[in-house]
Length: 440
Image (cartoon, rainbow, N blue to C red; front, side, top):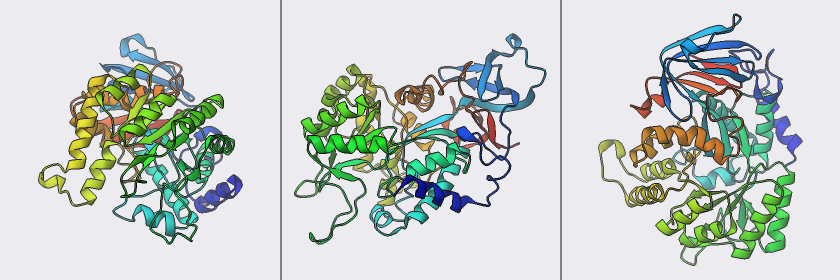
């Protein structure tokens, strides 16, 4: 679908909403119902997590879209024109970052992936995505990397434009459009062979074919390129590596020459090995990882998005009664073991949850699970702020509370260093200096 059609569809869906009012057409995603761009604020929280460490007694000054100052209250003289925001019980953090999202999906216990791809009209999926983007932003996630539209074409490009133009509220978006899959390997499956069934990704094969596909997606708005390095394509439905090493190498070389980083879905050891050899930027899931391969990732500066929350969610959908204290099923145990290997190896671990498998706005469960699986709480907070910013090549813009960066700020009620569940108690969200959520 042409980008103009998608953008027009989004505009129709949200016309008349409260957001599209006097502030509804500003560029850069700066529109918001509760704030005005260009204002000056001095925020006085109980403590500040600046992306590296926790500080008591700090204040943060915001002017326009950027952080003007951050540090001990005694060292900062607030501007005379600043509006004071007191947050006496809150911790102020950099805007949280979600490195693995699917805004055009919704929880699989509501509708299966196959039925979403096969039966839900594009207009329905875009309408739901606008709601999901708002929920994500209000949960304190001010930036997302969306890793595939799963049958919804280039709708992510239109949604990104709608956010940037202030048509709808949402986090800033990095998009990949249609994830690239090897011919005949992806889904939906189970149809007669003579039928041509629309796929959840874009099929391609061969060195020339994959180079063409990468270039085409970049030209149509992809910020990153996503490849499925393996999938359930074996004769008995088992996961197997799909793209050859030559195809993977060609895709990465082409993407990098166009300034696009590469994310690779892989859950097999061989798929992971080929992705590392090709020089990708991030590995998604990483279930087939070994200590040796994780060490190779660390040596080659390749980050891991473990997507712990997706496995946790799908295991519960399959019948695991987690809240009743039932023993962890095998899939969760294997994920826990993989994560420990990754931690021990020193590989960079980004916070990316595969949200869409579960409810948008509940993204913080990934941060909680990383800590539950053995990562120190402050490191889990770093993963969702300064580490994610670096992995996504946005460290010069976001990810820390420091002078000159975008004023993406989140206030949560309590101390996340002691209890990460307070990340669900979001009292304040500011994106690029505009307050988009504020609760007393």
